Length: 168
Image (cartoon, rainbow, N blue to C red; front, side, top):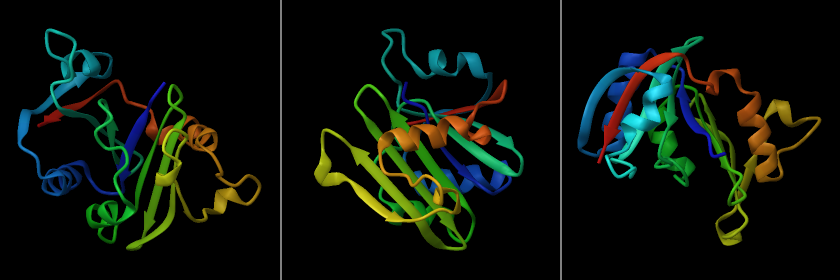
C-alpha cells in the first residue's frame, strides 16, 4: 500500500485556491466531482499510466483533504509545506510499504512542529525533527510508525464522493 494525503484546516474552496497557487503546475483536468471508487481509474490514461499529479479532494470535520493518487506530493520539504499552510494547520502523511518509506509533516500556527521522513533505500534523505503530543507513549521512529499514524487517522480516509483534480 502507499496511501498519502495532505489535509489543511480550511474550507474546500479556499484550500483548493491556495493549493493550486502553491503547486504552480498547469491544470490537465479541471476539478470534477467523482465517486471515490473511480478516482484512480480516472487519474490514468488508456495505457494505465498516470495522467499527471492527481488529487482526490473532500471536506471532513473542518479539514480539506487532498488524497494523493499518484505520489506527486511525496518528499516535499517541510519549508515548502509551511508556505502552503501559512498560519493554518496542515498535515501531510504517507507511506509506501513496498519500498519501506514513510513521511509526516505537521504544521500549526505557522510553525513546523513535526517533520519525519524515512526512506530505507536513501537513508541520507531521512529527517526526524520535532515531537507530537501523541508520541508520548510511542514515538515515531520508523516508516512503520508513520503507516500506523496514517492508518489510524480517520480524516485521511476518503469520502464516497469528492473532486478529482489533475495537474501536469
